[in-house]
Image (cartoon, rainbow, N blue to C red; front, side, top):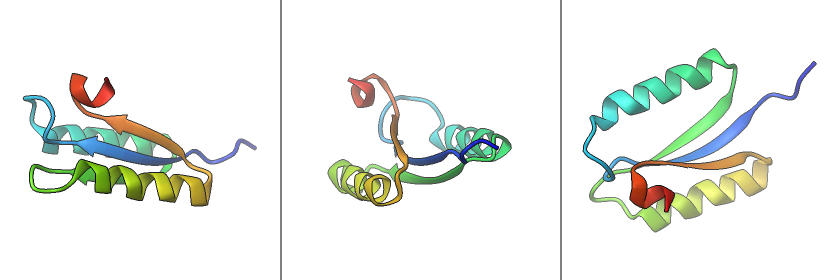
Length: 77
């Protein structure tokens, strides 16, 4: 039996020009299909990216999750 995959994901929806609602729905659907446990910390224009990163990092450390970032080129750089 494999270990369940657990993720804390920061999604920078203020990054890029694509429809972020569609991207979030696709990410969530694929993770559910894979049987993953996850929290998606979504950063919108008015939210602080640092606050989202801090919350996701704390969750990942406390729960042994993989920490991931999703967004445009700026997010990944």
